[in-house]
Length: 372
Image (cartoon, rainbow, N blue to C red):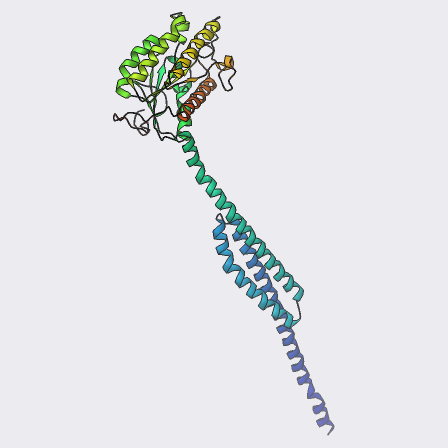
């Protein structure tokens, strides 16, 4: 009996071990459930964060809204399920609630930001698309292409400037940027840029250029003439007191030979050679006087003021005249280009610029031509 009693007493030992083992498995199960819950919360937060990142990086506001719609709904469903499970288990409830609130708030703020971005993008798109139209309308209301003949001597050629760019290259670039179609025309091709045609010859005086114009103008029929002349009359002391009349005769010819044209007449630049500046002032006065006559007669002639004596801003001064005392520096040439552009715009606003005659010359300046 004693032996039997001993065996009976020892029987509970295996049962106790099994119970401990079961309790251990339950602990493991709870630990596993809690771990899974933590992983779920981390995944939910990661999803919410991913939704915010996508919305912030989107370059299109409207697309951001489309992307957020499917993301926010699953996130909310997962959060609700997670919160419910957490409440049942009795752990991580504050974290779940906080994560749900934060995610909801973050999603709401992201949606608002995306909406604001969409409105901002739409407004920006409207502004951007409107700009070229308004610029072209202001710059070229008649849509008249510019067939420009630059008439003059070495300054018009662009001598002393690298590549003979002179004022022609920067002026043409500005006009194209403003929306004009431009074709520079002339008997000479000179300068390291496309559309480099010009009617200019070094050392020539007004009457000499008048004769060159008689050969070139009837063939090309420009609708805009740019004139800078008189420096060689000054330097050679030839007909200085007659430049006004000679210029008037030449302009009358140009307007007759190309009856759809407008003339932009430049006053002479300041000069640093000897004491010639007094004569420059007198010659410019002659030019301004004939401009008044043309305006009184209703003729399409506009002054491009290039001399600082009239107080205009952006005009070449002695600082923008090169070492030889007559030709501009690179900056001086650029200033000339700006002034010619302004004069063309002024003529356009006055309705003076007409479409050029159809004579087979293209409007685009032959920008793609070879061997410019």
